[in-house]
Length: 175
Ligand SMILES: [Zn+2]
Image 1 (cartoon, rainbow, N blue to C red):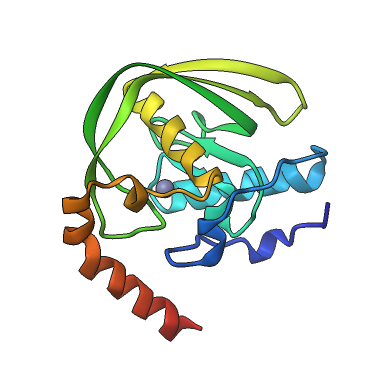
Image 2 (image 1 turned 180 degrees about the horizontal axis):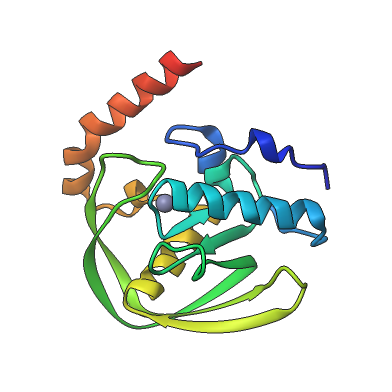
């Protein structure tokens, strides 16, 4: 695995290509990955988010961080995660740091068990309900190259069109 330049890790926004493709599994958990996790937590907290996935830091790897209350102390790291959803579906307003200014009611399962590897290389499972379950599903989606815009209903997508266009124009201007 190539060394990741941590200094280059920044919050990526739609339509950055890295957000649209499946992330690769992490083979070795070394200091580089530990620094990446630390940097991702920094970006998440500085942006006022409760979760951040590798592609959102510009890294095409299967890692996400979640902090249900948005604090450093509650932040946890999930590497090569698998999820299992259960319970009924709930619709709730959801936003995404990589889609600023876009919010939509997204249907998610009420419960979600994530099985992942931690920074010491240990596999663990954790079950979340409500907002935590929602965060797991949202971040897991990012690792499949899926974002809330892809989960919207047809009507929601039409309503979001102008905002997506603005983000596309801004992306072009930034390059
Ligand atoms: Zn997101």
